[in-house]
Amino acid sequence: MKTTRLNFCLVLIAIFIGGSAFGAGPTGIGRLKLGLTKEAVEALKESDGVYLVSAMEPFENKYYQPAQGETRFTSEAVTPLLDSAAKITLTFQNSALTTIYIGLPDNSDMAFEKVKNQISSKYGNPTVMDERKEEQCIYKNGSNFKLMSGTIEYVWTDPLKDGARIETRLRILSIQMCPSSLRDERLNTSFRSLTIGRVLKTPTEPNPF
Image (cartoon, rainbow, N blue to C red):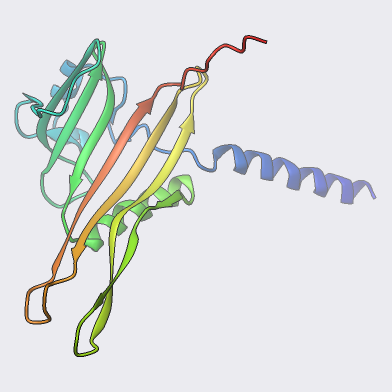
């Protein structure tokens, strides 16, 4: 009986430990970690396994409005994720790195699956958020086929003690459209990206009761 109870307790402990780690995620890519200063990021070198190959340039987009204390830069970086340098966007809040965004090769499932498998092997299966919508293409001669457009994301979440969290998002945005006729070329493109970022705690309204 004592042995049975001991085994049961060990199982519970294993579940608890496994459950506490499950769903966590990366805090960076190699030595490129959230929390680094801009100078520390620029100081990364080839021997670190991840490093910038071009100078940081201010991020420019007419739809982007930086929050107070926020700065954003673009560059190119060599990482263990891809065989060649990739475009990277880095966001700093009060001089500390808070978000890493890397563009993955478009229309390349191989690179995407490699990154997803690497993260999953260490942090467990992600939450899948599938917002794609199906469209039926139908033509007068009876020919028809289906398209899928929209986004699908694979998300790993690491809660922090201060109520914030670190989210890792692997995202595919697919754009497909029915051609006007079967002779026309079908629009079928996609954009892939990896984002690792700190998400602040959502403020809650005070309860007046």
